Length: 166
Image (cartoon, rainbow, N blue to C red; front, side, top):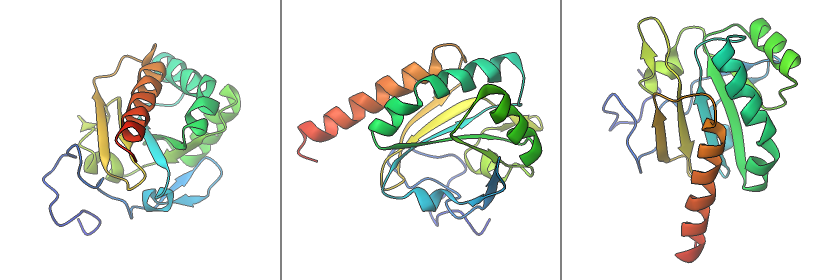
């Protein structure tokens, strides 16, 4: 795939540049977005199977509840599934989500992050630093409490960075 880094091995690796930075997806408002546009901010990229399902609703609400704290730490939050823009719009409206939900109908971003399983997106989260390097991967995520787990990691990551003089 042309949007993969030259050293892409089929799965993101800690410390390496995230794959598929130039893949363009639409959010719930129809705005086109590429991950490379978030350079300079930490990125929380959470993949989820389907809008409106119980687990995805819990996870979305919990990320929304902590959104201000993520933003205070310089994070941009993206939810990604293969649902349509219209489905994302309805889901975001129903839950009052203000962060961006990206529609990945062909599964391009999901495949690049190795979360495409049996024709659907597996629940997983990636934390990218300001240079868009992978700093943490959460796989086989349980929705309840996951957003807090990610926020705790971000706080720890930033504190370590400060301690090292960054």
